Image 1 (cartoon, rainbow, N blue to C red):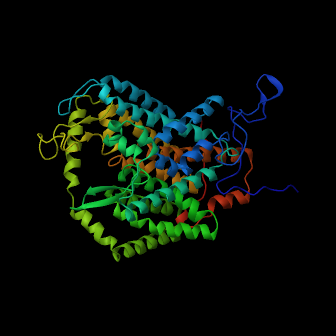
Image 2: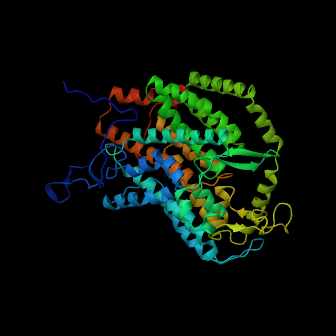
Image 3: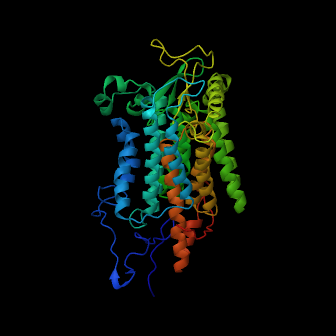
Length: 512
């Protein structure tokens, strides 16, 4: 009797083709000749340069280092380069379903730059060169996320197992949580980074550049009527922190509460409990609403599977968490946040002005953001030497949807949203833990785009989640087609506690 290899926790260990067909298969037209895998380096420890997948490990596991060096966002752009080189060496590259929509969106982004010279009514006049940084940053963010998606999706299970990527995303959640706690209890912690020292003083003092290269634990803002800290580390903005925390929550639950030893699960539960502290102190209503949507999303999926006991456990846990927060000093902060709504006026002004400006170029947009004339208080209030932050808010800075509308118009926004919706539809039947966490990370951006910008790490996280969904369907479809199903694989995919986003598997073969 042959021995059966134990199944991997996220599905069978099946080798996928590197060149569009299985490694070791005869080359077309050359009987007996075998295909060798591309030379991707000498195998070594995970994360070692030269080993497939090392740029992903360098990005997710070493992100605290990049942040400390002042390279948190720049690391995404830099590490996309070796990923692109490896993709080039292993071409042809396979793509996920609906990828044509995303390619059209990238073309639309480029086409919209012909509108850069335009200064629509209600905005501050500027030159094309003055808008170049914004255009370059956005384009680099979209291209880098695209490369990361294709790179992660083209890695084989033997090169970079899904389990490893899931755990690295779960680890990244812990990094974001640690940054949130740092911003809560050491709010004024900051220092000058290496990159900041190397930049010219005038450049380093620019508000946008400073948010990229200056490590700080929090943003100090007057939200409650007095200056209070809002956790932001390891990112430049509190909104980015909240966006990433919510997108990573599903991967944290899968990797820390479902998988691993009892000690790992205990650490995960402690971490989950501590998350409430920076979440409340962030004063981030978008994040609070997003967490509510996560509960609804999981409740619906559990109910559709008939997991009523798990649904009851989820609701009971939610009620217990709510009671603990209500009985703690955190409740006072939540109440104070809802009593202070002055940010609503600023947001309403920028949204109204954005929609007015979009009517001047509704289809193609203007290629980049624009600065509004005046402020929510008066059209005469604007920035000057004594108050560089007064007035002239950036249109498109308070949500990915508004950025898309003003930069790429209705056409670009439709393609962007269409790609996410198409991806959700393609993997809607994935009821594995990867399916739950991945679909959650693709659904949340459709809500967060109203209040958060997606560039750059939030979009990277969503695309890594899409890569896992894509690989998960391919691996399980190959296992079904090859007849390699085993009781161990089925139980590994279907067994999980309520918090671990479990469920039976129903997959369909999809085209590359």
